[in-house]
Length: 61
Image (cartoon, rainbow, N blue to C red):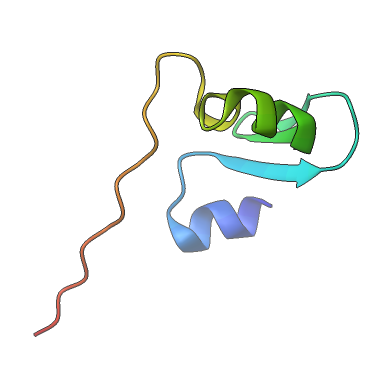
């Protein structure tokens, strides 16, 4: 997970799974249940007040 965070330049990482419980894998990585995602939408991944990140624009030069 650390490699993915670094290589992709991610602020946070969420792993989705079909279980019931949410838990932290590390300081910037969480495991989130599919049920929580279905009930809360993006808030389940980014927090109540946070907005999903905008896609990065690619330089097409």
